[in-house]
Length: 314
Image (cartoon, rainbow, N blue to C red; front, side, top):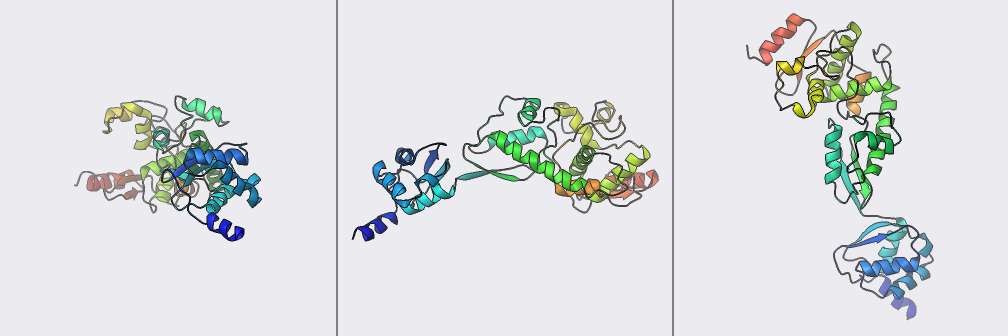
């Protein structure tokens, strides 16, 4: 009878003060402390009874620290299984391709129950915390969706995104074309960020990278508007004017030759691959068609005709 009664109790839903009950277990908490924490969180049961179950199961020392959600229907059996497996309640934050570092930080600041350890820190200070003191933060984090336990540090998410970009960049660099004008992985990252900002069309990325590669080989100015806009920073009002193209900044590719000094955004995997494997093309120019795609031209004369057609409606 005792065995049957215990089995019935172990599979009976626990009374909970809320739905769900949020249970936080700190590292080093004893099994008795876990039982007490569960009761204080809202599991309506004598802590001695819960501790008895943990101990009798033989798995009490396997319970893991973490943040857990206990929904309605949780039984003593499923509670212990969750704690032993470390099935923490997770949240997620998505870092979008083409975002700059400011936008990334805004997303982290708004992420649900992510501890804002970087709040008030400069980009330089954040990179120092991540062990990259000499590295500018722009473009160094891979755009993806990252899950995290409730109460996790935003610095931990950044560290994962940083390492993910390291891996993606290394993999892309290993596949670079033999005739690439790029000399270092950092240059590939910078070029990929320009490609990312110039188009969201998968088919156009290698062609745009091909135009930039051709210009780099010939010593031509890259003349890419997104880089100019990045250099303007808060001064950009959404309307790029001729005076902006003439306002010299380190990122103004109309006034300075070569690649800008840093990436201007977070490139995704496709943009990284396009940067190191550009299309083989004679094109030196491109202009937006107005439908999301670009028109590519090999000569200035062809380009001017394309501008008249797609930008001026002539």
